Amino acid sequence: MSKQSDVMRLYNRSKQTVPLQVKPPGGDFFLHEQAVQLGPGKSVKLPKSYVNAAQVENLQRRRIIQVLFDSEVASAQ
Figure 1: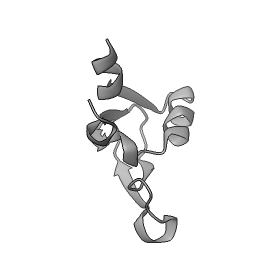
Figure 2 (figure 1 turned 135 degrees about the vertical axis):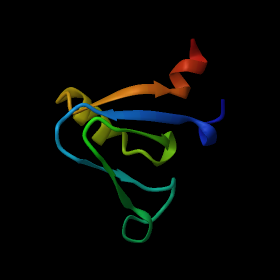
Figure 3 (figure 1 turned 180 degrees about the vertical axis):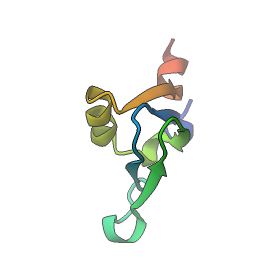
Figure 4 (figure 1 turned 120 degrees about the vertical axis):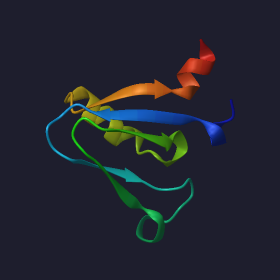
């Protein structure tokens, strides 16, 4: 799969809404960055190139979110 079409499904394991920062590749912070509100017990599918990888890694370590699906990892197997 190409980098452009890779997607991730993220699941909120916590009991609070989690804001996920997303922006298109090469997009400006002020013009293009948005927050996706992920409610408790909900999941969202996002283009992997839009996701802030450091934020996802941090939230995973804190057991707030879980990566249910990553097309890049799935295609490598």
